[in-house]
Image (cartoon, rainbow, N blue to C red; front, side, top):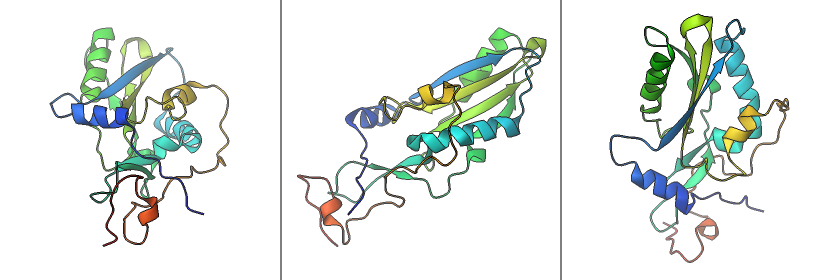
Length: 192
C-alpha cells in the first residue's frame, strides 16, 4: 500500500505566490521570560526537538514535483536537525522593549530557506532586566491548518513523548517515473 501524498493546499500556494517582494510571508511571536528564568540554548533545542516529534509539518519541506504531476508536496527533510532551526542571538542595544521588538522584526524579515522546514526559533539574550526571550518564526504556508499547526503544540505544557510516530508522508521527493498512480488525480503525468 502506498503512503498518502500531502500536497500543498491552495492557501499554502497563495502564501508562497504572495512572497515575491521583499517582505516574506512569515509570522513571529515573542515570548519574554521572567528575569532569572534558567534558559540556555541546549535546553531550548531539547524542548523543540521533543515538540517536533509530535508535529510532522515541522520536519517537512515543500518540494516541487515534475511538470504535470500536480501541486508541490510536503516531504520529510532527510537532513532535518533541530540545531539548524534553533539558535541564539543578542538583543539590540539598549535591550529595552523597543530594541527587543526591533530585533524580532529584523529576524522575522529574514527569509526562511526553502531548502528546509520553514520555521526557526531564536533565543534572544540581553533584554534589559536580565530577561531572555524566545522568538518563534513560522512561514504562513503549512501553518494555517489546525491539524498541522505548530503554534498550539509548541505552547502545550504537556510533555510530548519522543517516540511519537513519524508522519505518513513521503520521505523522499516524489517522481513520476514508475509511480503515475501517485500523481494528482485529473492531471496528466508522463512516466518518463
